[in-house]
Image 1 (cartoon, rainbow, N blue to C red):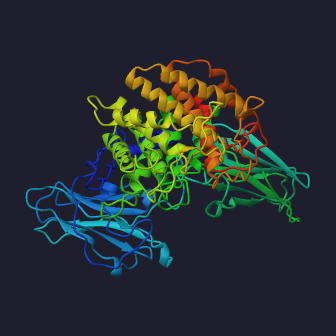
Image 2 (cartoon, rainbow, N blue to C red; image 1 turned 135 degrees about the horizontal axis):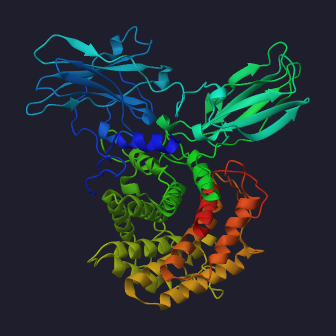
Length: 630
């Protein structure tokens, strides 16, 4: 069984999307995530724990639903459910009668005592029902350094007999098909992925690809020589929880040895991993390691490898790629990139990330960190609107379409004719009107019109936007779009760079508007901009940004711009049936794969090389470009 199948089985256990705020519609479940039991309970007062979320969270917001244990009493079934990615659990009672009772117990000493965690969420089946459930409670309490176990208990309302499941926790041992620590003699195959040497010792990294496991070996050595694996869940940036796995030394009278096998991925906690083999001579301090690599489980070609690399950089504990707790705009384009990959490739491995990004924005009370993913910046809101529209196209979950509509409506509130005759303000302080905000407004409204029959709202907005945008001079004499307006004269400011993403978003916006109106002259304008960008913003045929300042792939916004251009160029080419850019898109992919990708599928800022650093901004750009080429 591959990791993909394990993840799909986990998703199939069920979690419904949470309700939006009152201004938005009730959520529905994705096709891969049917709803959980539709009953709740009032929490009992007790000592609380805080992990990702505080205690007392509705199970309908669970990232996943693993039925970890069941027990019966007087025909009633008591079930313990665990939401592994969120480290939470809830109890359920079924096949029962009104007044039947269920609750959770939580212990921080392995189940020896639970006086401060007794009867959490204690609840009874109400009149007219046969099943009920508690709210969710944390298993661990990291802020207090407490590692917990939990159990579900229950009883029939008219009986004294109480039963409980065993004490359980989220997995401490990673398990995919097999748990960690499997003997390499049982491997389905042995692929030698990398070797490195130190003091004549050879350190090798072996993969058992069908089982998504790996092991390290040391040869040409002496007794006391050491080898181990490191495992990382963020592309090799950190590995504190996966350090020195299987650490072992060559025994007396031998010259070679190996570790046991360890999993690369952790499906239950939705973590995508990389591993490396390390080692040292017993009488020396010098340590060497192979590069960070992974199995071919999700890296059968450059496109799937790039997508897997992006999934590695997503944090299941926060629900986003960035370190911004309120979601960064690059989280929106990362989600879009991954959704487009799944849409184009047919690989649904990472569909759970869509659900998780949505759910992590929902608080315990059902409100949202960012209501409908809107915030004070209109361009950020536009990126999220497009992300959820892409998610809708892939999942057909109407909630996501409704978020996209809410985002477009929010942006429309900042359309203003008093300054420069029109345009959407960049942010709520209304101090700047720039290109990208208005391009996104054009693209999102035109695209929504094309999704909604009988629309009379979004097309007029898109037409008004293009009428205004085309009159401002933001498109310069080279057919490139500059970044913003000089509000003193309402003309192109010509002071800022012609960023690649400014060329891409308007190209697809025009294609969407042409599709909505049948006006083919819009495609002519889009083609001029695309042609200018692919010639004037390329060096030796490879797309570059007009500025080559800092290239921090995790924090610098412009590291993702080229991918946005490529994603929108491909969308335009498809909508306009324009094949003239196919060779350009193919050349970008070829350069990235040959000169800007490591063995883990991670790519950097310069597509023509060298590979300078990695991070999710650069990875989004690479995946968009590779995906655009097919």
